[in-house]
Structures are given as structure tokens and as C-alpha cells.
Length: 162
Image (tube, rainbow, N blue to C red):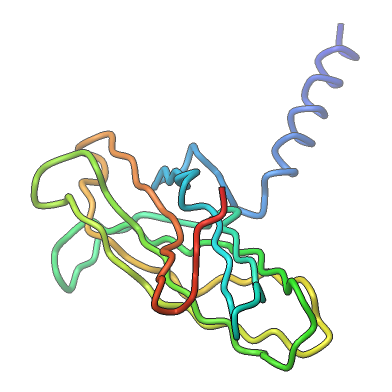
């Protein structure tokens, strides 16, 4: 009997250790859903597909901002960037959004953030996390969800990947 309990305890500890990086920890505040239709974009340079950018996860936490006396959610998305063809372009600029959808009217809305990563020539894959973006949220008082995704800007020769 003690062996079975010990084995159960060890397996629970192992399961907890696999999620220790903080990405996609849905039990923590905030709960962020990455919208499937906004998960990935491709950037074109000189008419050719050059970079694929995909939102693959996030880190986040909620806190009370004493300065403005509001509850806030801080979210840092995690991106996978793949170079699709050999080129001398090293700077990858893109935008993403964080959005609250449910809750009191004063918390609804979408905020756009801009990110810039540097991928050295000869590199074909990298992971990038920008600084934390923040939204005011009804933490603790309401059960709310947040959404995130990439914005495809056609003027910058970007398009969504399905």
C-alpha cells in the first residue's frame, strides 16, 4: 500500500515539473486563448515569403497596480520564427494583440503591441518572447478570458496562415 502511494506521489511530482516553464499554465491568471485564425502569419520581402511567425504560448500573471488602482494582467507571448528562404534580412518586425472579451464594459477591448526580433543570417529558426504587455482586467471578481493573436498587416506584405 505504501509503495502505491509513493508511486502516485512521485508521478504527480514528475507531472508538475514538466509544466514548470510557465507557458500555457491555464490554472494561473490570466487564461489566454490563442485564436486559431490569428496564430501564424507569413512576411513577404521583395515578393517572396521570407519569415513565418507563429504564436506558440505565453507567460502571464495578474497583479494589482497601486499606481493606477486597477487589477492588471501581464502577458508575454512566445513566438516561433522560421526563415523560409536564405536572405540577408535579419530584422523581423510584427504586431500582435491582447484582448478581453467578457466582463464589465470598462474592461473590454483590444490592445496592439509591436515586436522586433533579430535573426542572424544563416539562422533558420528561433524563439522569441517580447516584454510583458498589460491590460486592465476584472481579476478575482469575474471569471474572464483573454485572447491573443498575430495581426497580418497587408501594407507590410504579411498574410495569415491557415
